[in-house]
Length: 153
Image 1 (cartoon, rainbow, N blue to C red):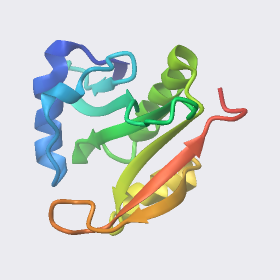
Image 2 (cartoon, helix red, strand yellow):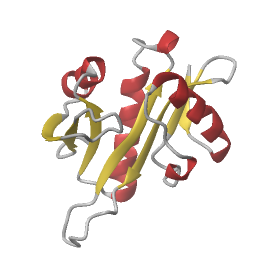
Image 3 (cartoon, rainbow, N blue to C red):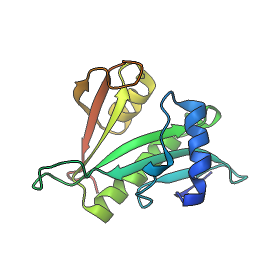
């Protein structure tokens, strides 16, 4: 298994992993922070997982802390439970902190996605910050989760 920074030519394969694994589909335009996005490749060089992340620039409050956001993470089913998602997340988080001096990272997760919630909360240390009602297109609520980087990197 090889994990490396994502490149522009990986976007089609990243989208394919997204289409296979997730009910939400993300547009290629989200690949605007290549320093924060990583892919996992199998021995044949096929992308079997990815994390797509950004620095959140949507705050109108100029005094707000710089922070990262995980747009999407996906690992192909046959490559799960190997620690790939954890490794992808940690690499992205470390880049957020070191390259952009981010103070924390946030993400959204479906309330019913217990496997992902377990990874984020129990393995990576995220906490639920709030619930966003009807966040997803099908009306399901999302937990907005947050991990502070204080003393992490």
